[in-house]
Image (cartoon, rainbow, N blue to C red; front, side):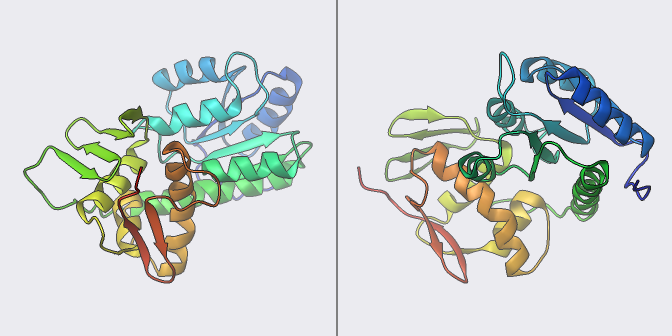
Length: 251
């Protein structure tokens, strides 16, 4: 069993309606020095997260009341929880399920049954990376402008209220998604480098390769929420080897 944990007091939230599985995973994590919390569904987990500090989430997909995908989106919509590593641990192994989870931007997709050593390796790695990111935060503020709104084609961004409309329909974004989209909106038509965007969203100074890797799930989720299909760039254009730009998307 792995003993090189990131922090012995790190809190792991397991969200699954299979009690036997939660218990066995909990034993493995507690033996490695982690503090374990559990919930049987997404709604219960959200309520628990309002009261308890959580460092990493392990969630099933097929659950009553709120499935794992819905739970993930609710977590990422809350600015306090956007940096928490989120891992799916599920028996759903179809390529389409795995692909959809990755398109959402989930940090890892693990399949049941899983060996304790493999689970701990993933948990340790995600917590270590989150700790590194938190330790080198250098937030970048977008330039101040007087206008309350940014309008780019069918897209409208209200900066002060953190609200976004597409085709006059309000769309819900996480704090990171909003920050990225607003920054691109203020630089409408201009290419913004991946390094500049990742500094804004993650507070990280890094090279283009890592910046691109971290940005892609965020960009994919943004495009999906804006109504674009998988594979469509829509109004967020990818300029290969450089970065991204926001352009007007005709109705």
